[in-house]
Length: 183
Image (tube, rainbow, N blue to C red; front, side, top):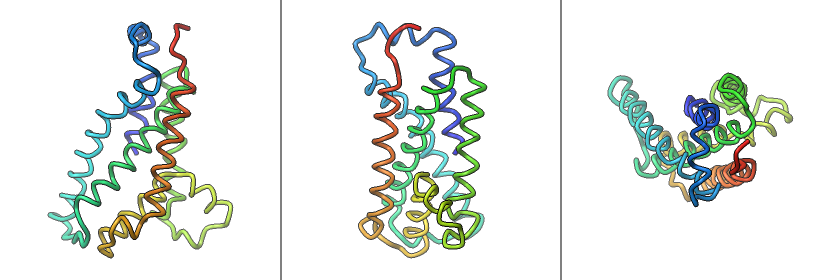
């Protein structure tokens, strides 16, 4: 979830420093720019995932019952979806401080409503509905399915499709909001 804040701040910082003027003069389209901003952070997120999984297995003897590549595929979708949320935030915020605040504003509901801390079924219907919009809710289902039950991503098709849908909608929304012009 820290990746949301890093991504949210990235575009805002470039706008504040004037670096976006260089990108505006290139033939790169807004969508390509958004994908280019996501890619390096996905790699960093996968490194974080490897550290967390390694710590869980080596220090806490957490068994991974499912396929490791399927877990990484689900993690890649989650990372890209949360980074896309950070891109949306960066198109809304005008300063780095605003971007950080909006990033924290999305992080807390994600953790509280995803079923990570509290049982999902015990939440009021409105909270469950809101949780369906958050990528962490679906990633929790994928992690629990692969790590605990040894499920395939085919068995977890609904949360995978929801992450893909979130990723596409957020990336398109960020690309549309990003104005490739000075000012």
